[in-house]
Length: 113
Image (spheres, helix red, strand yellow):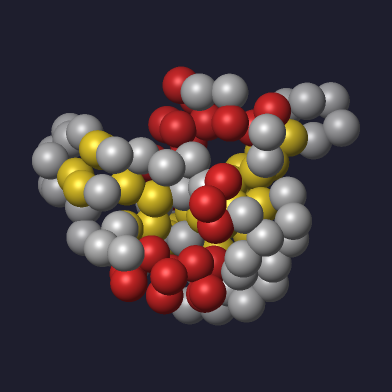
């Protein structure tokens, strides 16, 4: 956890995320590209903690895996994502910010409060 940093500002207390899009709209795009497109639309990429909450409370992983483009791992060029392993267990892992995969999409929200 000490190697995870958030790129986006989040409240320093419990909060809600509103107008959540599960990443389908950004599927197949690298986190780097998704961040630019989301910013143009006035949306914010979800952080690692928010993506963990999303996959815990929804069945999104049955459709696609999810980038946490609002967070970085260890260095600015690594992004976390959640996927299902061969035993259908969710895992948090990382890849590079400029990589893209058809099965991964960057989730986003309209606001936090």
